[in-house]
Length: 261
Ligand SMILES: Nc1ncnc2c1ncn2[C@@H]1O[C@H](COP(=O)(O)OP(=O)(O)OP(=O)(O)O)[C@@H](O)[C@H]1O
Ligand SMILES: [Mg+2]
Image (cartoon, rainbow, N blue to C red; front, side, top):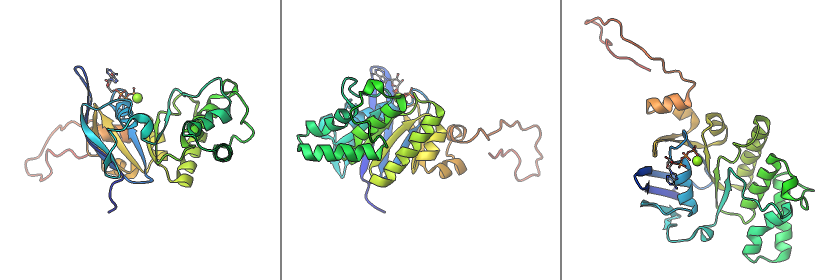
């Protein structure tokens, strides 16, 4: 068993009376693609924002390679981010957007130029370098966001519903792209979605969230075959739990009264 790479320990987040995240504990392996899956309001984004450093938790800790991240501001955590509302700079070109995180880090120009070309190839947008963001389709913008997040080789990439604004065909195309980039770069990815098909398609493991807690963590196959709770069964499966009513029992039957799934 390899040591955990990223550790979330007893994380709790309160907003006044609301407890958005209850007691989330999770180990993530290096290079893993782990998805937070759960209904609206279950605490997925809040957990991700705490990882990103946008919010300080009420309690708990996050460790990367055994060292806490909580004492470091967001920009020093070396974590890439792609969120639902693209945070690209609309007045910059594609190339300038991708170069931005490298410029901030004062990398030499030759290195930046080479990296921008490499990223454009990775997301299949060669030839778009000088195009303004406003003149791109939603899917193309999402790919630029991905390229920019990956440009400075962050060891961890956070993605919060990055595809939810796109139509089905485009979504599937970029899912494929994300999968390929994950395999090619080995970056550790934490991904948020409430779409179970997307979670099953992309993830090594899935953490099912409900009301600020993780109900179960496992591969798609594990969750499907052995759901720990009814909630997981209903959320992962195609609703194959049927409501059953016991109409009669025979006292002699050893299985009487047991209603299996
Ligand atoms: N800044 C905030 N102030 C107060 N309450 C908040 C804040 N952010 C989140 N919450 C509450 O915390 C809970 C969890 O929200 P969160 O955004 O983490 O859910 P989510 O699982 O990402 O949902 P969705 O799928 O809708 O994005 C919700 O009840 C939400 O209203
Ligand atoms: Mg959310």
